[in-house]
Amino acid sequence: VNALARGEIAGLTTNNLDAHWMPFTANRQFKKDPRLLVKAKDMHYTSADGRQILDGTAGLWCCNAGHGRQKIVEAVQNQVAELDYAPPFQMAHPKSFELAARLAALMPDPLNHLFFTNSGSESVETALKMALAYHKANGQASRTRLIGRERGYHGVNFGGISVGGMVANRKQFGTMLAGVDHMRHTHNIAGNEFSKGVPKNGVEYAEDLMRMVQLHDPSTIAAVIVEPVAGSAGVILPPEGYLQRLREICDEHGILLIFDEVITGFGRLGTPFAVDYFGVVPDLVTTAKGLTSGVVPMGAVYASSKIYDAFMTGPDHLIELFHGYTYSAHPLACAAALATLDVYADDELLTRGARISQYWENALHSLRDCKHVIDIRNIGLIGAIELEPMAGEPTKRAFTAFLKAYEKNILIRTTGDIIAMSPPLIISEDQIDELTGTLRGVLNALD
Ligand code: PLP
Image: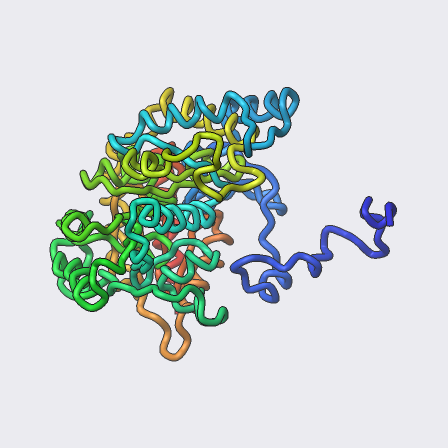
């Protein structure tokens, strides 16, 4: 057994890829022709075959500070040597409080309290559970219904896929949570083609929430969860005024509003959070990814004082919320997050997107005349290029573009027939040109 654990397995080589069942991956295609990354620094990955790959996706929307940042690396190295782990239930370590206080200071009032998780999916489950428990604590236990949105992505756990609206992520997994409904999505190219920033048309989609309120009665609705900008479904932007209108309806009917800021948080839109960009303050905000610039897994949920205070009643020796993870506020994650916040501050990265977004927008929209392009969308340092699907073979054209782009040393992402890009916030103008220039060649060479 010990020999096996050490890896002394007959025939084990780095080419033996069979044992690892890869997530959200076409396993058989990948294992025939693997794409392995072995190093990363600043804006580039090094592939196993020795190429420098320009990172057009910040890993997976997470490495906002770029790769291999010295300050973050050292903070994690020092932390693992000093305190590897501390139990987070009824015990703690100092860095979690420092981190929570600094994160609270970054967000407008009344989002003053932080609950730590290990991923975006866990942040979503946490926020949904908080919303349900809040209403119970507040004497409104009939508010159990959760409202999501078509094409929404809120991670992969049962709560998240229940309120989520990406069909492929739901259809394999049975009935999921009961008592969930979905507003319609806001994607409508017609009338908003090649819009720059938020689309002008579509504020009326927010009235779908009124339809839910009328159908179910507000006394049954706990919370509405939306991504302020939907990333995983292919970069779907909120029409002008849409998020403000959701807030109004929620206020009118005592419904909690949850923003899932797992991708929009930490500078992606050119402001610290989408909350700042849109000037709409929800009751709960889920984050992850950019919190540690992807270096150590970590998520955090912001809760408003109203929500936190509703639990802080009763005898003070009793646990107020029966929820938490073994690795909530893990010391390595806290150290990584604190150093990441330092790097964001030192390099002014939480607002850099605002300074470079015009250049990004121009570069992206210069691809408008490329083959098969039916729409281009952008906001902050996010960009999407939507392609006309191949007849009878949806997703194939964009996936081919992804493979060809990787051959040409740029990393992009695709979902359906949409190419999505979200580079590290340190990207230079020259690197934007390189990304879009290479992409131009790739798109024009597609069938
Ligand atoms: N919520 C949103 C909006 C996301 O974009 C993602 C991941 O892309 C998640 C939740 C899930 O995060 P994780 O993969 O860390 O669980």
